[in-house]
Image 1 (cartoon, helix red, strand yellow):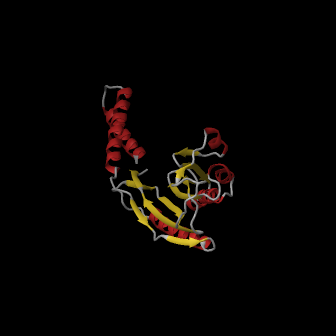
Image 2: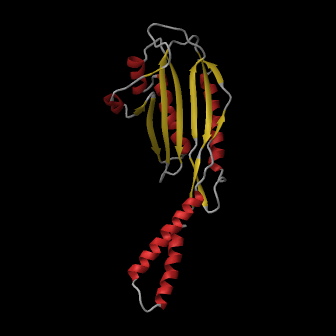
Image 3: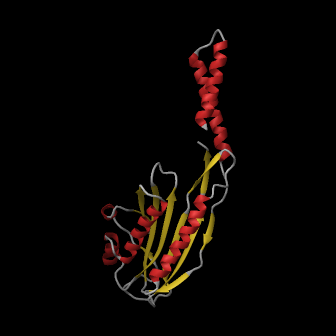
Length: 243
């Protein structure tokens, strides 16, 4: 849209300039650039949206060790369906504006109950890694949250699967970061409380992008081998001038 506006003004300006006997092409160009800048600002202002993000919560899921795989698979399928519908919805922006969606999936998991143990923190607490440790595992950290970016040549689903796989392997101790946390930061019989947050990027130049935020807290042992998971999809988007 910006290019079309620019060309239209440029053609009108050039025609008018051709009818005049005086003036400079340099000053005409400056006038065109000024007009384009003003029009672009108006378009951007028109496309600004104050719509608040909507959070959709799924029913809580409780499970034991044997039923964990099936329950979590069903949960992710529900989240995937909700996200697919949201990404396909182009409504919500003023005319002449395009919608850029950025859904956020959040999965909170903790034991259904805990028991005190002198070897473990009395309450769920942050596990702090040094700069060298973070560099070794190729992650960033803000408070209890580890951050990692995923960029692939596939679609949003593929990026989410890779990010989710990394998060689950970390929590299960099946990758380098997970092994380190289990051996050095939260040894048995202590337990984790975790939040997996997946921020999908739909405005990457090519392929897909997901920002993973994995909050892991170390606390007292599980009372039983049972967990409860709360999941949600936060529907966030912004409006931009249509190109």
